[in-house]
Image 1 (cartoon, rainbow, N blue to C red):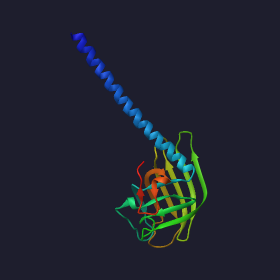
Image 2: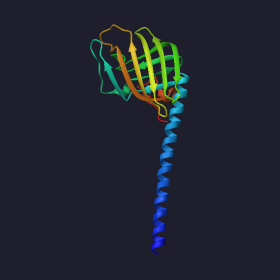
Image 3: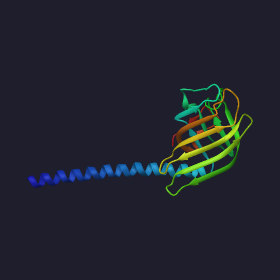
Image 4: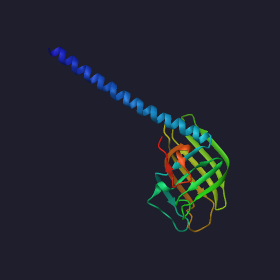
Length: 177
């Protein structure tokens, strides 16, 4: 009887370990799928990032908001779109022409995207860093402006998502996948 109880306990531990292992594999597979989707979106210039966190290096008067999710950056067709109070005091949408767009994936799978943008209100450079195996990215925006209410340098953090999950016309609605 003791051998049967011991055998049952061992089988329960083995099966619970297998279930935990399969859950971990499922989470890892989902994370890798989001990473592959994000890399493809970056390569085709069809992505968006709604900022979850940010840091500002002020130039002149800083304009900081607690409502970070109303600021995002992404592509709408061939144009870069920046919208929100992190980019302009009114929070309005601005479209920019992009040049020198370059995507580099290193041997480990880390992604670096760099490009220049130019528009009526300002111009600058954008650099996006995304670690291998994850769609979470850091976006550094360096602006060439001398207007007091603009912050010269911004860093945004958030998930890179395909552009079709964003509604660029409304107030930063993100359609959940």
